[in-house]
Image (cartoon, rainbow over all chains, first blue to last red; front, side, top):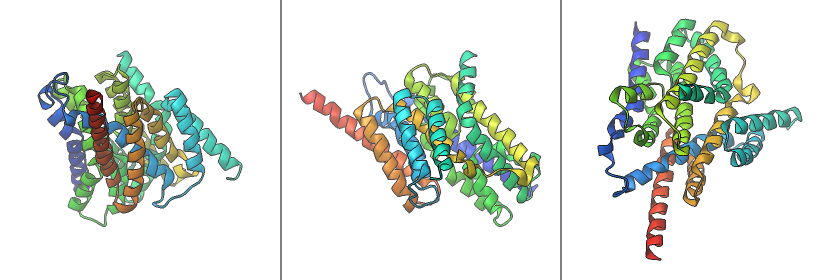
Length: 109
Length: 229
């Protein structure tokens, strides 16, 4: 019973973090008219996705265990970045990065 | 319906990473006393990998309130993700917004926000991406619980690399102009510094806030410069 309550509480607070901003900002009234009033807030929101994505990429690649670890992951991600730049495809970026990672590991890197 | 399927299929390249960590989660849940179905139930109810791993580490040793509060803190980054996708959802009904928020993961958010940025994004694509990651996470949690100690370590195969690589492929959508490129590099550097200085996943929030603020300031200056000429 206690386990059930903990899981229910975890589910509730997690959902709150997901829904809060969508509920608060997800209506036209929250922003004003973009044509006449491109507010600083709206412009700021436009740069949140690249900022968050970059933040999700760099530490797990460069410092997976909490300290800088130059190695296979970094090389694989650099190749992945080139492929990402050329193809703009998540699929090809993943495939190329993983193949490079496995090849380097096979070669004993 | 076509977009629902497209969103679902777009999660497939990320699925091996999700499944590898779902299996690991199921195995670890079993070790702290969950049944395979209990492990699966937590995945289906909470659907947040980092928070679930953190909770397992506290299970039995901490009380209910610390575990729930830690879950809240680990998931605060969803506020930023929700804020940035909210403008794309403003024409939707309240039940649709509530539904799309329900299974929004880092991965499905990244897929959906990139699709919105490219133009053709819509609620069905977002829902399909949410469902794809949700199903993979739920089923692999159950499988991990059933397999127990037979689960392979994802890091042995470098499968944790799938997520940053996938995010990298989606990030390119936001690098159309100079400001976007600067924001991405600055945020990556800030996140790295943050990962050393801040506990848990606070580095995502710190870099997300500071990096995007930098973008807004640079764009503001650029626009003013254009007007002045």
